[in-house]
Structure formats: structure tokens, C-alpha cells
Image (cartoon, rainbow, N blue to C red):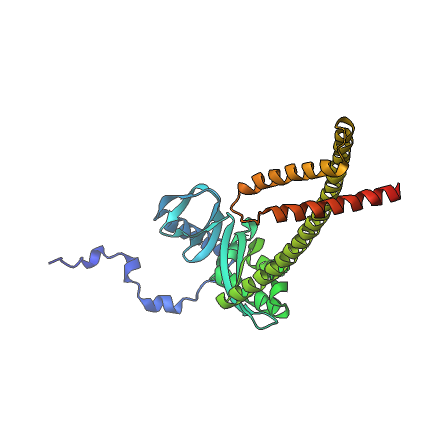
Length: 333
């Protein structure tokens, strides 16, 4: 057990009681004392910083780090190594400076009461100078962008019909871009571009549109097919008429040549054979032609009446026809 100090060793300053201090008035705070207090405060803060340790934090390329000092924003650090005093300071977040894309799918209806799914791709990035606003002013930037996309789509598409909506995809994208640029620039975000990537109606509406398109195509195809058939038939009729005309010319020339040949044969035979009459010559020629006809017909399976009376009748008919043709020629000549 420690022994109490003897009374002789107690210093006079230690024997003073609190009553003497309470009776003494507090000295006034002068400018020198105020400067002294500030200097001591800075020394205390400096000592508290040195109580921690230097920590090296590396920020990736195209990123910016947010440094806080005991919960208070301190500074922004760029890519590369940065020294912070841990645990008093810490990098509470990193923001990417690269272009990011948010895909938003919104369901709405058109002016003609057709429900469609509109897909919009929003490309955005963080502005480096406004990284503080991008980190502290918005809790969820994607939700904010999605809400404004919904608002623009559901106020623009219902004023259009389905076909017009398909044709005005660029106008819809420009409307979304203008709205987002005006709003998101105050929060440190820059909207690079917006694209309407998809506009899909119901499957039944798709099927009906395909049927309408198919019917229109079939109608056009039928019209073209009928026009082609018309041209084909006209050309075939013209070809047939030309063929018959040429065939008639050929038959007429053939018959004329036959008649001229028969006349020449009869004249030569009558002049060389004394006492031969033109009728006898014609009978011989007719008989030879008849036998040639029989030989040609015999090659086919045909049954013809053949007796002397038939040959005589045929000879008489051919002779009368020949005499009529000859008489007409002489009359015309």
C-alpha cells in the first residue's frame, strides 16, 4: 500500500483549493488567445489525421471516384492511383464515364385501339464536371430515365394510328431524346442518343396485317397474270391468223401448180399420142392419183368403199370440177 506523502513535501500550488479558483475572475478572451485556440485546434486535427494510415486507391480508366471524409464529401479523384487517409477517408463510390445503354419496354395503345410494345434504347453517360450531381442528387438514374421514357411514349403514340406509328419511329425517338436532355442535364447526365428498336403489336394483329398484305399481293399478282394471259392469247390469235393466211396462200399456190401441171401433162400427152383425147388423159391421171391415195390410206387403219362404180363416180366428179375450174379460168382470161 502506498504511503501518503509527508506534509513537508506538498508544494504550495497543490494546497490551493477550488475556492480560490472560483473566487478568481475568468480572464477575457483576447485576439492572441483566439489565435492560440485556433492553432491548437489545427494541431489536434493534424494529429488525428496522422493517427490513421495512408491508403492507396486505384481508379480504373474512364471512371471517377467519390471521396468522403467522415461522411462528408471531400473531393473527386480521376483514374489512376490516389492516396487517402484511412479510416477517416474512403472512396464511397465510382462513376463510369463510358456510354451506357438502358433498354426500356413500354406498352401503350394507338389511335385505332391497337396495343403495341414499344422498345426504346437510351444511350447516356455521366458528365465529368457534374459527377457530384450525378452521385448525390439521384438515387437511381435508370428509374428516372425509365419514368420519362414511359411518359413520352404514352403521350405520343396514342395520337397516331398503327401504320403511322410504324412510319414515325424516328419522330418518337427525337421526342424522347429532347425530353431526357432537358431533364437529365441538371442531374449530371448527358443523353447521347435514343433509338426506337422495336414496335410489336399483338400476334393476332400481326397475323391480320400479314393476311391483308398477302391479299393485296395476290390481287396484284392476279391482275398481272390476267394481263399476261390476255397478251398471250392475243399474240397466239395473231400468230394463228398469220399462219392460216400463209397456209391458205400455200394451198392456193399448190392447187395452181397442180392444175398447171395437169394442163401441161394433158397437152404434151395429146400432142405426142395420136388420137388421144384430153378426157382419156384425165382418166389415166385420175386413176394414178386414186391408186396413190389408196397406198397412202393403206398405211393407216381406215376402211373405205372400193368398187368400180365408186372409181367411176370419183372420176366423173373430178372431171366435172376440173372442167368448171378450166371454164372459169378461160372466162376470166
